[in-house]
Length: 151
Image 1 (cartoon, helix red, strand yellow):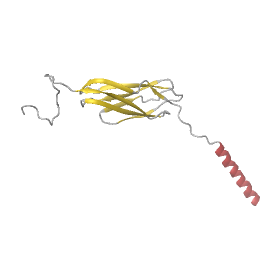
Image 2: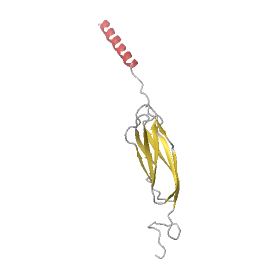
Image 3: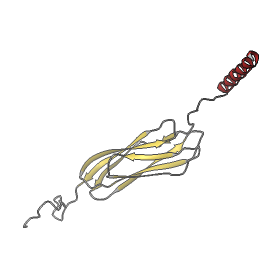
Image 4: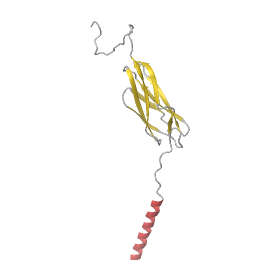
């Protein structure tokens, strides 16, 4: 009986040792995202006129690239991106639209989350929203909370 128990233990130990030897470590993705540029300056833009820019990228890796999401920091920005996997050597885009509702300088980030080795990546867009002017050349205030002259 001792001999059978010893054989069973030896067989189990050998099986465990073999299974540990064949376990492969999980490899990192070989997808890589390379943007043409990571910052865009709209310059001066008129108030109330939304502007959009498409950041172009290439999959410079060896596996399909998948953009999972594009995070924004406020409701003033709308994002879009290539939804299908981007094959090695192919191109895609991440778009950012700014609503330009508030006058003044702005600089906003969008964060691209993907299966690339370099994920996440921050992209920036900036510019200056120039206030609308009335026919007299003075900035207008379209706020419903501000009384108009003569009221």
